[in-house]
Image (tube, rainbow over all chains, first blue to last red; front, side, top):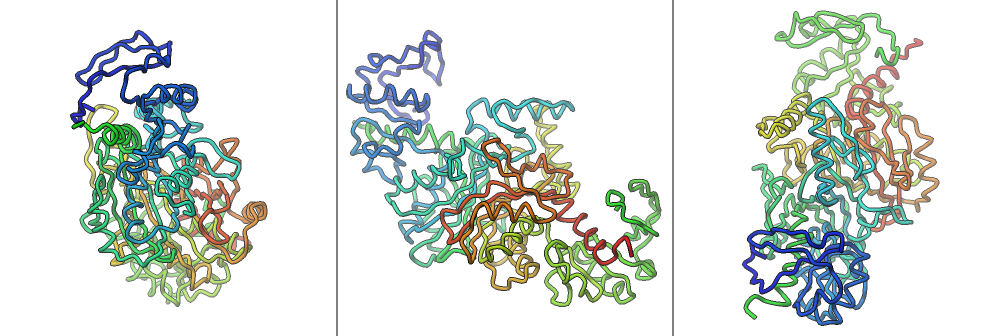
Amino acid sequence: MERHNYPVGELRLLASARSAGRTIEVGSFSGKIVEATPEAFRGLDFAIFSAGGSVSQALAPTVAKEGVVVIDNSSAFRQDPEVPLVVPEINPEAAKAHRGIVANPNCSTAIALMGLYPLHREFGLRSVVASTYQAVSGSGTGGVLELEAQLKAWAKGETAANTVYPHQIAFNVLPHVDCFEENGYTKEEMKMLREGRKIMDLPELAVSCTCVRVPVLRAHSMSLTASFDKPVDLERARETIRAFPGVELQDEPAANRYPLPLERSGKEACAVGRLRKDLVMPNGLSFWVVGDQLWKGAALNALQIAELLFPPSA
Amino acid sequence: MERHNYPVGELRLLASARSAGRTIEVGSFSGKIVEATPEAFRGLDFAIFSAGGSVSQALAPTVAKEGVVVIDNSSAFRQDPEVPLVVPEINPEAAKAHRGIVANPNCSTAIALMGLYPLHREFGLRSVVASTYQAVSGSGTGGVLELEAQLKAWAKGETAANTVYPHQIAFNVLPHVDCFEENGYTKEEMKMLREGRKIMDLPELAVSCTCVRVPVLRAHSMSLTASFDKPVDLERARETIRAFPGVELQDEPAANRYPLPLERSGKEACAVGRLRKDLVMPNGLSFWVVGDQLWKGAALNALQIAELLFPPSA
């Protein structure tokens, strides 16, 4: 909020009883954590929930009923037909029609859609095959610390255990993000289909995804192959990406210029590059999208929803 | 050859004039490097070439004419209609019909085909969408040293330069392996199509590939989505993989068991897992293949060609 000069009248830090009483410093703000009872939210315009599905499930409906708009970062309400699932560049009108709760999408999905949606508007999206390269910060601080500990141990000729991931992540890639469903896909992989359909209002969209954790600290990358209703003109596709807010075109392969997770870390905009006609799918386009999932996949998107519903000028 | 107990009557180490005279120890063998003039090959049964395309181009035809079978690890002859391109588990008969030179395929292609070919025999392969996760040893020792230097520098709070790759590879992934062609694909990406067609004798096969370098030392991984003529029965697909030589099935996601590059390093067999019905392609199957590209993508495959043409018992 500070970075966006979003005016904050009052900021309350709410958490479980376990954390209550601790003092937290955030930017120029310093405050004490208060226990998140339903009463503790009273009088706020909105509350950003980021404490996992069960907390959201238990608390959000009560808080919303009290007139506090809940912007929920968990997956608890994303598929609830009463709750809009919003990427502000894509479906802002859905956010405005909320009934007390607005859901913030899955990080990989939000980033993928920043490339897919502008192309959809131009060419009509039919299907997507996606493979991801996801950073360890997607698993929280624990993922970052685990990769760093393993690499520091390696540099000293030692080894470090793994507790966050089922296997060593240093010098490895794990085709396993989130838990497995009956159909052999992980929940994370199915989110790309379920959330993509809802956000873009494309109930028939076909999506097949493989989610892979890689030893990158921050920013998710993905290889996307999409099929469209209309033939894709490459130059038109590039212009479409260039004109869309929140996304940059980095597509000069001859100059070694394409989106990279290390370069994208800490940046708000997602980046799209390596656009080329696909050699398999009808009216197909293959491309590469990178975004800092702590921004577009989480904090930034939640803030954008707040800016949309409670604009600073109001 | 030692690992396979392949009987070696005489081993000659041939290289450029620059390396001539150096003594090399390989396993229990020790010998001096001799300059690779055409005469230096005389009397050998076969020669394994691994010195890049231009050396192969200049020397292989002359050596082959002298009756020495050239097993060439470069890309120089892979698309030559006179030269068989061979994965011994897939097209051994092509190797036997050689006219002096046999080409060893690209590493990613060889590994992908170890998963694709058995499924093709069962269901009839039509098209493939592939995304790779390629180890730095694919760029030679230089790639390994560069990643290690960058990580050791990081552990000391320093930074290390990049010379092998156009960008830092530690904590990064690069959608750039080999150089770019006119159509926006890299040469490496097009090899999956061109070499896949030739090895499997499927001139109409459609392949779209995205090749990505990841901070893994050894073993290439790939996410594959394939479309077949016949509907794919998952249990039959698993049996087909299990029954194929040179490949292991590792497909128990509930037990966190799937192919991993770190575990696969140093193993001859490739591994296939995460088999599931694809949600986009007709008669589609998505899966994950990992192989040690220094083995199946290079040394092992070359040795297997030698074992096929000059069997130890003969």
